[in-house]
Length: 219
Length: 219
DNA sequence: TAAAATATTTAAGCGAGCTTAAATATTAAT
DNA sequence: ATTAATATTTAAGCTCGCTTAAATATTTTA
Ligand SMILES: [Mn+2]
Ligand SMILES: [Mn+2]
Ligand SMILES: [Mn+2]
Ligand SMILES: [Mn+2]
Image (cartoon, rainbow over all chains, first blue to last red):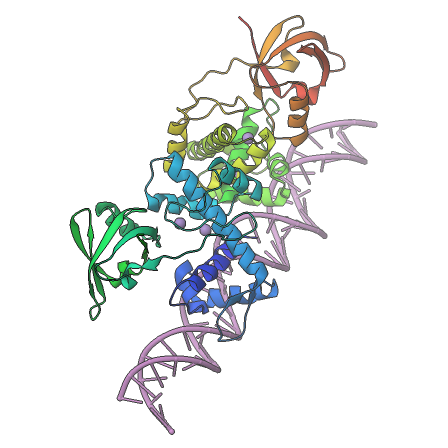
């Protein structure tokens, strides 16, 4: 399958994993940087290929076949990120950009080799789970967004769910990275902001950021 | 530039490096597995982009710009081969196949990172030279094809110039690999065959193979 | 050197993956 | 419940990278 198709099913898959999951052509179009018309068009084509269910004006739903394809692409993406992160001195954003292209030019054989080389890792450098070679995610995700965290509690960063360059620059500047500890000092519910303490620095996050930084409770 | 364009200029570049260099559309078409018409068409387009010189019925000649592009793709191809060969247990042919795709989805930045990680290697696993980041090949190639080798002399394998699966299988079965020693026991000039001795095995090579196995004299 | 074989070019056309503009349906606001 | 705003769909058309068939040029062979 083509790069365009792989990116399309992946976008639907990822959209479904988000809170705010309105998986209509317009949202997929926005994610992929194409026109709404192009997205509708592609949806129809993929429906004919049995990769998704399409009914006019309804949400797009991946079929089992489509989900499998999406997970295979996601697997390759995250394996590449893990490999590049391990071998080279590159930013999370750069790694993501490279993986976004490499994921479509990688045989299943090579993906398995990368996985074996890395010791079959369960998570990529963002903390995102890596599907196994059967397209299964076996880990259970207990993490919550910082926006949902409890005031006065201490958490550990488990995922940075983004591919935005500026977000990663912000994270790098403020020690916000995988496995670091965060204390939630205040939730400003009305203003949808979260105040945290990281390595003795107080940071006030707006919802754009507090909703994509995922954490686990300490135990 | 697109994958199609990169493969096209690379094919011209590689054709020019061969003995039998008739760089007309038909030969490039054959190499790329496309029709002659498609090759002529592409040649015209690339001429407009100043990547090559095209005159009806004449040979295709890369411009400086085209040569630079070709060398950049070749660089990425060979760096990928070197990396995959080092990290994973994959055959030369498999490595080549993966590199053929990855070469087009690799930023200059990533290529430089791969090169640095490997200690800026000068040769890939086939013995082919790796252009540096300015597109220069600084090594001098003194090797000759086994078909040109002298009877009674001993040589060291320096390059296996092919991407054919069966050829690599043949090489693997007969200890024909980079840096191994070969004794040329007889040249059958009339029949264009070469008899060699490798690890006490006598092998009779036809010209198809003797012309793509490159060797250096021992000193 | 003339005929035959071969290669190249031109012409027409196709599918993939886009675009913009217009028509139509859905959703939100008054 | 209308109206206005927004999203989706349809329609038409574009480029890229191919194809096959026919026309034309080159090269080989006799
Ligand atoms: Mn990523
Ligand atoms: Mn991608
Ligand atoms: Mn190769
Ligand atoms: Mn290639």
